[in-house]
Length: 300
Image (cartoon, rainbow, N blue to C red; front, side, top):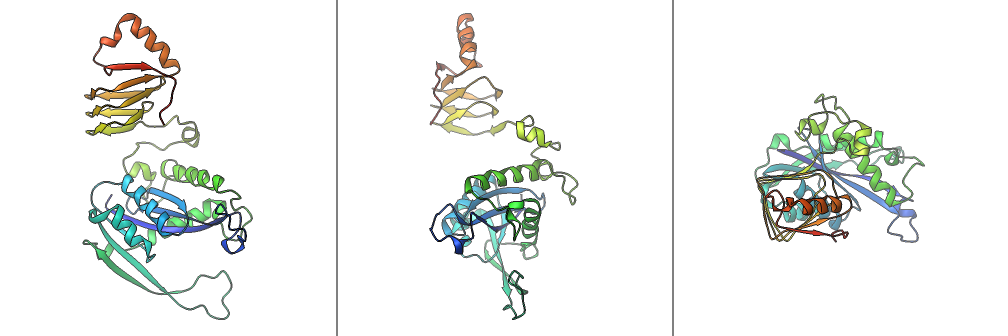
């Protein structure tokens, strides 16, 4: 990933902010922050919150976890981006802003008419951003796609979310479908395929029942004092020390992975498998961690 554009799209829950007379934090403005990969068209991460410094930082922290290496980031001129990107991503990104200058609305403009853009100022902030790639057009086009395909975000509608708890999963489902199921007309495949995350177009059925779910893979990493639920997890050439591993009987994998003083907790159907293994002496095999403890407790 070499070029990321960030923007936020406005929506609301329950009522618009100016009509939230009770001050209920669950109602009013609901901004969806989006990080968009320019080349692969993938939505790298997103965050639902308010247009505040705190939620901006939460968004950039998610972007930091979703990316690796050095890349260029472009945002609009929203003030909290500067501190949030500096704190979360630091100097591993080349950061630039595209600041748009809007004309004053004329007297005969309608209430919902967008203001005219009279200038766009490309402002390098730090690093060495490529001037030719200081752009937010692609993520803004993604905003339009969201408004067209998510009825809750359509302007002048009565289908807005009535509960914030419903808005979040609706967005999560959309972004999963967009990345894995929808063939993008520009790249002629799904964004996840273009980014190398998967090699096929997922079906909606497979997305919902997780038939196409891929393992979360850790490669060449060291962990100490961590908790892991082993279902759909693969460790490749990793080292785990003093970790608690919870297993219920699903698929997992480890290859050339070392375990030091780890505890293997079996739950559900896996407890019966453990009893059989103990009976036939299979626990002496090097394929299992050194300590196995049956338990029905989930990690905190």
